[in-house]
Image (spheres, rainbow, N blue to C red):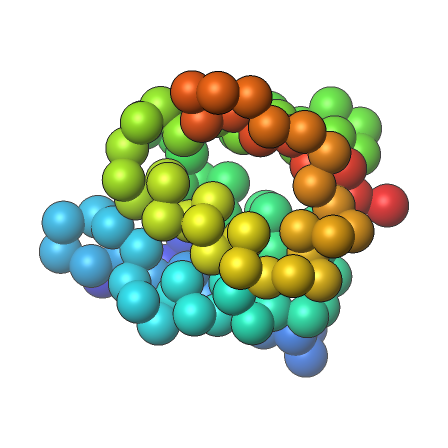
Length: 104
């Protein structure tokens, strides 16, 4: 099990991967329910997009492409299910698994 990012603050979020390198159900639930600093949230999931997708940060804009990998798609779905995050940070989506978020 890999741990990509661990925030030492009170809004701790740990993203774990299973043996096949997919985010665990527990990690996806944490993403869905996370109410802390959304920069930490995006920073914690960014490494998931290194092998199959892409995550680029330009200022306050986070550009994420899933690359079609189901692990990345599951992570985006968990972000979408986090209503507070999605309502405040979602900027745009494009067909093919491309998303932009703006974190103030």
